[in-house]
Length: 223
Image (cartoon, rainbow, N blue to C red):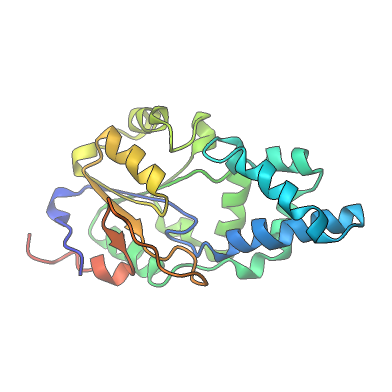
């Protein structure tokens, strides 16, 4: 178990992809499905385009465009949402994510999804999983025009939701974003050890890493 002082936490901020949901869908989409369909559209072998696609995507990492389906639809001249729906069967929750959200609700902890994903990507995930019914609020960084990596995101989120950083737990699979949240002053932050169920677990030098929600499910633990 990971000791969380639940008596000092009112709000739980949760990432979506790689935290509540298995990152396998997103990795498979961007690394395999999109390049294949891009190559098919141009009637070339995927090996001829894949390096160039990866380079174009990496150039936008950490920016809002990196997470924007509208941007990539224009950039690649493809309907990204349509392509995502083609492999929608791969969308899945991480183990015990639903149980964790239900438990938080029973203990009156405010459950806020904070994601860099575009709203139309969020809608696809919700349609497949229904986890939105277990959330009190859903915030996309696109609502604020800045990604979670940027301090402005947290200032805007706090203005909108009035969360108390000292009484907030934030869970995310990105160390860069965890660092951004920590810099803002969020007192409790946890990483995700294995955001993609098909890949190896990761080690963090700076943050406590969550392997399973079972490690923090006991909200009645001694405070």
